[in-house]
Length: 166
Image 1 (cartoon, rainbow, N blue to C red):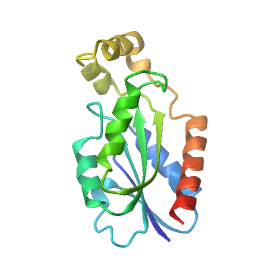
Image 2 (image 1 turned 90 degrees about the vertical axis):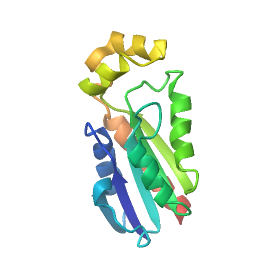
Image 3 (image 1 turned 135 degrees about the horizontal axis):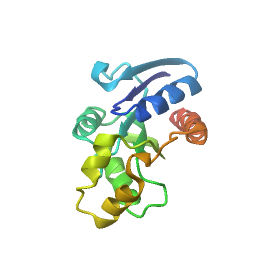
Image 4 (image 1 turned 135 degrees about the vertical axis):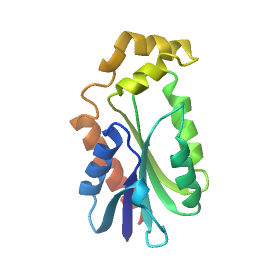
């Protein structure tokens, strides 16, 4: 099976998870930033990661996922929110829906360190809970993430996705 691990990363969080996923799978595989990905016909499975931006998948991620229609895809998503934050679930569902045309073999998400730029933007976000959360945490939000526990969980996700993809 030929596998592509590709990612869109702004702060390095998603790239770190991508590199860990790549190391955890065996066989014929490639690791490329999204900007370097061409034709997908050569791949049997695509691991694709991106950060949550604007409460869902960023435009570049959506465009890539439309190209992956009908293909087996395993999504991995990074975000600044703690896993128990109420607003996270709907945002992750939007990310899942962005891959609606693909044959989704799994999805993984983890917290990453919030960049200063993103923290500043989120201070203006319409949702009061998000603004309060960022104001309280500031640039410390997600510091230390993705941590070893997040990376171990990502590796397990990758192994399970590989098994499901056969």
